[in-house]
Image: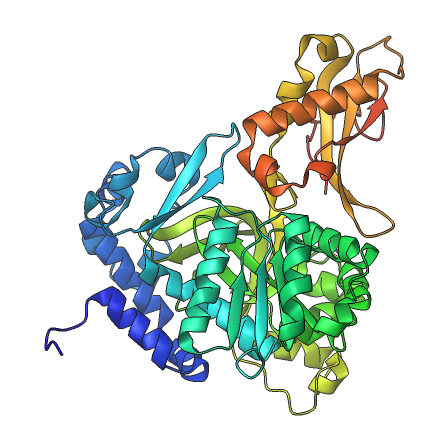
Length: 501
């Protein structure tokens, strides 16, 4: 045995593998997150060339940033003014990629990828979020579990990141087998038929509408989902509690608060927070009380509601949008992620519920002996930058514009449109585009299929997330044609919005 100390990554693995979840989270709750991220700032100012230049260009003296009040006055970093403004190595510690051993990719508005390097040690922060879900919700430390990764595989963040984190749990001793069919529906169902009977429960991990497609396709082929005690892990999109209940009925869920969980994650920051039985129960309670939801969130529509670890990912709110700090190979310091949302402290949430007469967990549908983790909440309505999320892919108006600019289509349409996702009566997602016709142009039968095919072609060409995340049978958008100046979608004299939620 060597007497040399373990390198930092090995120490992190040793800590994750050998320390129980309760102790790991207790240490996080007890940590001084403000001091931790002030130290991260000081390290980045000294060791990350791009951040040093970013501060200097804004006349920020790092030596003057020595308390949390000063930290909160630091300039926000964003994709345009930081991530796209500096070469990738300069955004890493030491100005080098040598500390990273893996990379994730996210698509930009033109399909040009943004690369997010990280190390295996960085990944453990996210593996802890998966452990929360698998242990607290699914009791996977006590039950043999088949985890079926239904996210797209490749460089895109969802599939490989999820697979790697599940492998970390198996290494920690969870009785867990990880299958990786990716977003291949036939292969997923083959895995389920062959392997699920040998386990006490089966976990499907994927984008919400795709997981529903898998469940519906399996039912149509005779799979008895309830026999496999399925659990569901989602990421990428906001969904309704009615939709969650629908999937619960189709999978034979006995307690939906413990049978499904959504992750709030991004390619740049990893998994930032996760649903817990407590947050799911609260959200379901709020779904039936729009007045309470409006009081808590400022809107009656329901955002994703998750709990987060402030010692891992530190949130702030700026103009009703979220700002996050987190350590990684490309560290984030007051990074503006363009998600509309807000924060609720754990004690604040409990006080809010008491104000509406909720004094016990049983009133939320939870067991009497349930004890929630004392972690704060972050709520997320979705992107505030005009993108629409569809099967986990960010669809940008710029992608659709190119489809409408093709010569045949431009002879009919003004180029203005409204992009949105809709939920069908059966709970499926569809991509809908309302298109404005030129003055004097009347709708004709050939227009709808021609426009749909043109937009689909450009989305596949320009947006790698759309091409790899969205099932082929869901890629053709639903097109409706509207006259020039249509009052519902294209009112005259009003600034046009290209997306609608």
